[in-house]
Image (cartoon, rainbow, N blue to C red):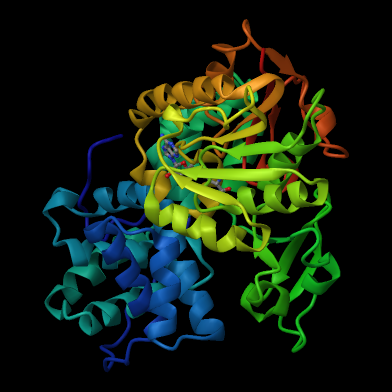
Length: 478
Ligand SMILES: C[S@@+](CC[C@H](N)C(=O)[O-])C[C@H]1O[C@@H](n2cnc3c(N)ncnc32)[C@H](O)[C@@H]1O
């Protein structure tokens, strides 16, 4: 990255000069921007999960409709764009960003995001952000915020990313343009089989899809509800369409799933269609002999366990769901309650086969992972995760898969699943077991799903399938 500059009044190409405006009277700040700021503060100060904090803030402050949508767009969008937005701010401030008061830095981030990545006109982004500084008790910084954002609005997003990406390698440039850390862009490229120095066409499409607001997917648990119940709410406030691949999926174009009686009554749930497909692939793979004991080794919070339990119930099989953390096991108990699932709390690396039989017939290892395949749903994770996390997680993933294969009877099937496409967490983990256990071609168990590549493992993608980037390998235990 080139040296920071601090040149008030510098005007770059790409945006016409702004007329100076007369001093305005302070307008009351809108509550949506305050919620977005509080979200950024909670993420920065408490390491909070944005998708848990934002709905609470929206409810507490009574935001609805357009205000709720604006708070979501600004809060999530700023978190997703953070690294590149900080790169822009660093060029507009003549001191280290670490030396800017944290709340003021978050105000600037919100303002820069609005000016560069939304349809809000730049002058309105600047003015409302100065108002926000006052409303947030940082009025002293109003002049500073105004001056910095005026520099930010010297260029538009392509103008700034051109500058930030000038002279760097193609992968780093793509990372800047799509507001991703370079190591994540590299992991996507490697998973897609693209050369980091090449045109990176599909990697660009994958990173762009990762930036889009995710569509909510629902699952109609078999035996509990029908998909038709999830397509439209009684008050017309929800609009869905059947998912293209899973027989139980609905994709919501608009609306709050909580408006649907089937969701409120826990006969249906929220679950990415890709997650459904991975659970269903485990259930569909053939096993010789008994097919009665199923295990979900890492079950919390229970999305796949619920679908597996529903399918198992229809076949007279029994699901054992295990989870290491008690509070997540409690979520599993709650969601699987209709099917009488056995839920245990423990380390799956220490599980034993069920009493009286050589092992489980079907086992799911939905392993803890970096979550790079679900970044759309976890806006802060993109910049919080570190490339260094991968090695430690991969070691845990190998240990969990080894344990799963130990407790599966010979001829039984293990599904190894991650919501990350990172090759170190997917193909490399599976490769360590492929000599001893048969790696099945998983593709036939994803019927009618296009673009599954050469197999034998399956990698789903947002830009190809509209799902999270789920990975699934099926192994037959020996
Ligand atoms: C990717 S999540 C599973 C998601 C779940 N299958 C679902 O669809 O809702 C991984 C889970 O594994 C749990 N976990 C982590 N280490 C574990 C271990 N050693 N044994 C059992 N569970 C573990 C985590 O707490 C987390 O809940």
